[in-house]
Amino acid sequence: MEELDTEDEPIPTGGEPLGDRQHAWNETLAVDDDGNHVPPKHHVLRYVNLADGVEPADARDPFADALDALTDAIAWSPEGLLFTVGYSPAYFDRFEASLSDSVDLPAPRELPGPETNVTLDEVDMLVHLASDRPDILLEAEEGLFGEAADVNGVDVPDMNGLVSFPEYDRRTGFVGAGLPADNQDIRGISGEPVPEDAPFFMGFRSGFAESQPTEDRVTLSEGPFAGGTTQHVSKLDIQLNAWFSQENHHQRVAKMFSPDHAREELVDGVGENLGSATGVVPEAMEDLIENAREDGVVGHAQKAASAREDGEPIILRRDFNTTDDEQAGVHFLSLQEEIEDFVATRNAMTGEAIAEGSGVGSRVNNGILQYVFVRNRGNFLVPPRRLQSMPTPTGTTEQPQ
Ligand code: HEM
Image 1 (spheres, helix red, strand yellow):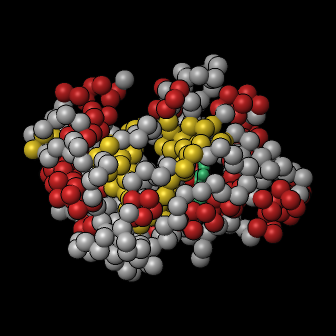
Image 2 (cartoon, protein in one colour):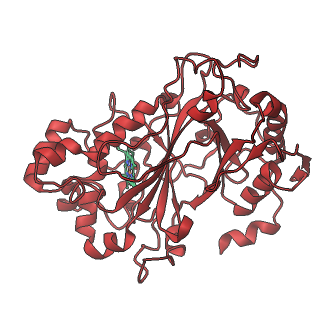
Image 3 (cartoon, helix red, strand yellow):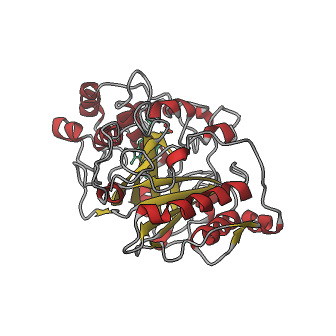
């Protein structure tokens, strides 16, 4: 595979000084011919706890040094390494002080709609590492949490004894044209249904410029964590075989985008012709119910767009495909100012009112819900870089514990 070829190449170093937003990735991402940001190809999510008896203050300096070592050792870019460190409500619960009112970070929970047996990820921290090169992700992981004493030649403190790892400590994935097709040889998938050029398993492009908010829109504007953001990460299983065998292109387009997109043949192949926008017109929920009565089907993008505010989506999607546990899926990672913005968007996608007010089912003909099953949910605060190592709930470095 292409990525094996890069292993002997030096790891890129250097680059511009970093700003205070950990999630400010867009300025360094490539932009495709249509003006859409191109996400890094490979991703690792490391779920991490503070070890028993270790206080945040004990781990703060070594972890800050370890994170600094990563940015000193590897260029901040998709060719090098991009990362964020997030902290869960469970992490903040150990302090006497409560989390600043300026941050909306509830514990994760099952959301309304057809969700059952969702595992709630109540680990302390989530480190999201992303790069075009899997070998760089391994180098970073080994330095941060493994046995290596350096990252690309830069000394890194040993976090051994300060942190521990839950059972599900490592999740991985990929995104980009060709990668899903290359990785479709997994449990439950017969034949090779995933189109060669699809960037996502379900066969369509996603993350168009006009259906993503700016990083500004998802950044906390006030309070001690100003410059930070919140992160929701869910793991979704996709019933890919059924998606490709029970539906034809026309039906897939109707369910992913909208019935109008199918009728008017607006989506060629994986959606190469769409440019930088799906052409979905944001409609109010009442209009979607009305449309669903006429069409008997409602599109995923159409529903999700009903959650826009002032014409702009409210969650920044940085999701990627996975074959963890030999199961086709998505790690749906989104950034938003408040977790409530994610919940509102997810409620729009669930479309309960549509199922109640039309012939569309709670899953059947209701966007892609028949094929997508939530397995995990977790909520995190991604603080500004100045507070990225073991923040206190009030954003000070003193100890209000
Ligand atoms: C298997 C899982 C999913 C797949 C394959 C998927 C795929 C897509 C595709 C192809 C689009 C249209 C292209 C684009 O606008 O970028 C889209 C739009 C969107 N999706 Fe999803 N999606 C998934 C899950 C979710 C989830 C869990 C949410 C959050 C609740 C979500 C929220 C959105 C939003 C906000 C948009 C943009 C709507 C707008 O234009 O305002 N998606 N998705």
